[in-house]
Length: 316
Image (cartoon, rainbow, N blue to C red; front, side, top):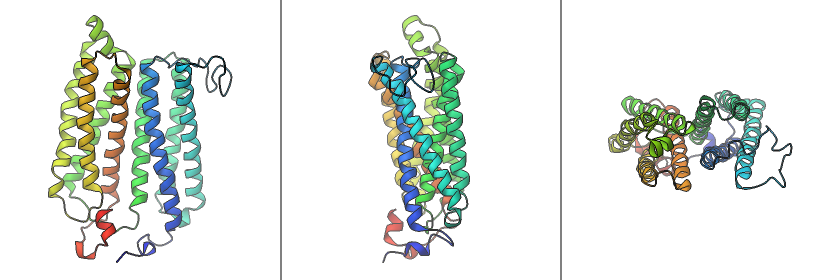
């Protein structure tokens, strides 16, 4: 028999409002992952300075006769960032105004995301004004990935509010945190390498190969940590909802990411779609691992028996 949603959301929580904000948060995650992917396309197509001014493009909201593939990529990248900013502003305002009907952590998490998107916008402006300086490009990517992680975690926390879910063991939570840290480090190392065009120089001229070597060396422990996370899911207690499935999905993304990385090098960076897919998969992996961590932290402190769990809780 299905559990009554209001019996699990806690005092003062509004299940309908939670559902609507959860939907908004899920759309934010999609928009942010797309933002990282479009940013990768902008770099690969050398379109980072296609719009020479900021925040407009050639002094217009929608450039006319200057429009081409490169200008469109940079313009759409900025448009996506603007939409994300507006959505986060709405989420923050709603969570503050209606805070008595929502979990106490939500206004703080929403405000933190809004602050990050403001930093992201400032870094974007500096990146253009400083002509794609490598440290700024890397910081721009780092902030975007943090936003993906934070909003993904926020969505997962909203999705499990009031659910009577078991908690994973502490050792598994630590393993998930290590996997997340290694994957983020690998992403930032890859972003720094890409912002300096180090892989291109290594392949064409034999210079800057230390960056490529470091990126490949860190890939091994990062991949092994995620695979270990998935491999140990049979050791977890029952009643964890979607947590094991999320870990298995992360392992699948690691396999895809490794394949894309090898393919990118074999094609000597001459296949833009493969390179873009490599960065997009990295963003998806960060989002999935953040979801895993959020579900760990959002679970109750003790396990519950399967007899007490409603069917949709066991599988949800």
